Length: 216
Image (cartoon, rainbow, N blue to C red; front, side, top):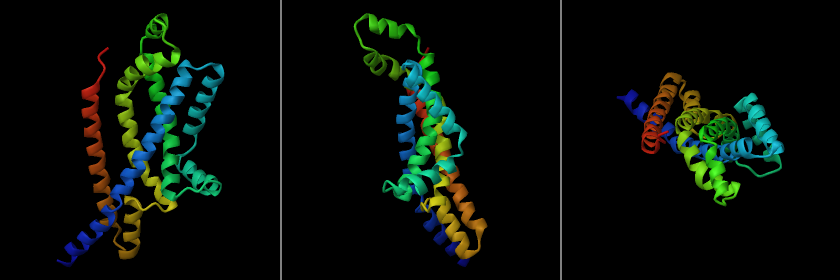
């Protein structure tokens, strides 16, 4: 009975980090989506200068461990800009994810038939209008399978923000483990929570993919 009571208490404490984990994931994915689409557009449709900038961003960021980006934002950039641990960690994950998402969306844009840009320009649309109204909607749907995989990776990478003190699931599990000296229980609960979150997100994204899949 005492063990069950301790188990419930431990679970209640760790599960409070669930919303923090979801918040970090949501912010990181949103930032990564914005950066990824922007860099992909520049990479595919930009002039030589902007194509080079976008390519360098993708290569350099993907070459650096995500945890290093977290430390840079929190210990360096946060010294000039007032960033909370939550925001610094979330932005770091977003910057890292943006590099991978840029490759996903680059492939999606390149999969759209190039004649559609020519046709759009022929009827008087600007390049920007053609990208926004014709190419981007198709690219988004083509990118769904790859983006769904990236989303689950970002969810799991959200554990990295515990190093700057963000009280997400892993951080709370570590606190309980240090206090109770029962790491198996604490980290076992954390494992089950991450497993449930990953399965839920996978099912959700698979539904979205089926719902909005582009037939080509």
